[in-house]
Length: 188
Image (cartoon, rainbow, N blue to C red; front, side, top):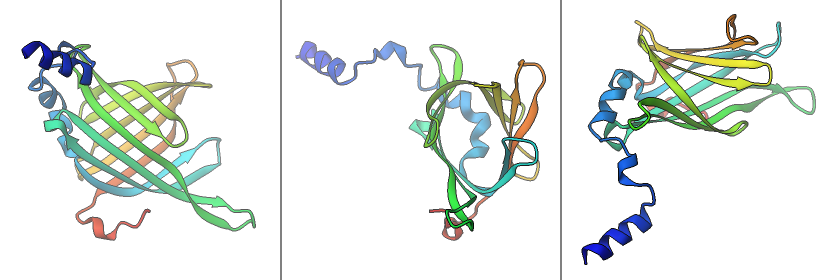
């Protein structure tokens, strides 16, 4: 009977149990980011080319899952864009669902993201004082995103680009405030 039960478990859960870090290790690893849990709204700007800055209304919702082992992050941003008739219309500029977790086996943080525009990405994340950051490659070089918690209980995020990995210029910035009640959010 035990052999049958073990065979069933391994057929349903193909990942070896030894590949998963101990549950006690994961929540401690993310404890410094507990400030992120909740709903946040504010504004952001992005500048793809000098002088072509676009602003967005931004919403981020973060939930602690699996006993604190995973932060589930949903991002949704809207901005103005020229419509077919030349008038500006509101469009979705960013729609994402991500997870931030600690990989105990590899002894590193992972940021696993899926966005409507770029699709899937799996990045190494690094904890920094008051927050965390991750980097990714782009056709023009590297991109680095940094999220920190301010003394005013704000979520501050910046995005920087670099062609050589040494000199960086900011192309994105977002400041969000904690939402006390979800009833006033009308992003969707």
